[in-house]
Structures are given as structure tokens and as C-alpha cells.
Length: 77
Image (cartoon, rainbow, N blue to C red):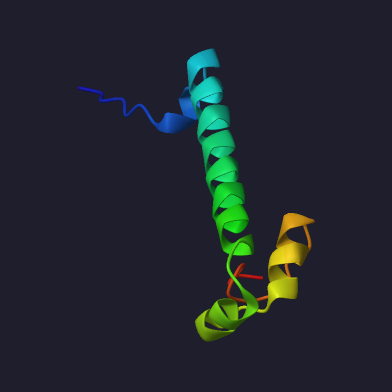
């Protein structure tokens, strides 16, 4: 008697469907907007409060312009 094992290599990998791609794009957009809202909220704090948190006010301005200079705002570099 012969047995055949079917491995995953026989099946071609499928691309994610339209709804999976749309869902991933919506999730990325939501995360980007949430991060931007947090930066806008931090920009309303005064310099003394930001210094107590450990963030320089210039770091917030840089982050809003797309330049991340503080390890607190972008810990993994």
C-alpha cells in the first residue's frame, strides 16, 4: 500500500483578497491618524510639562514634520 503526503509546497500561495487588503489599508490609516492625533495633543502641552514627561518641544515639531529625533517618540530605530 502506498501513502502520499501532501505538503504545502504543492499548493501555490494565494494573494490576499480584496477585503483583506482593504482591511489592512484601513488599519494602517487608523493607526497613522491615531499617532497624528496624539502628536497634536502633545503639541498643546507647555514646555515645562513636556520636559517633565521627558520630551523636548522641538521633538514634537520634528515628529509632526516627519523627522523623528526623540527615542521616546520612536523607540525602535
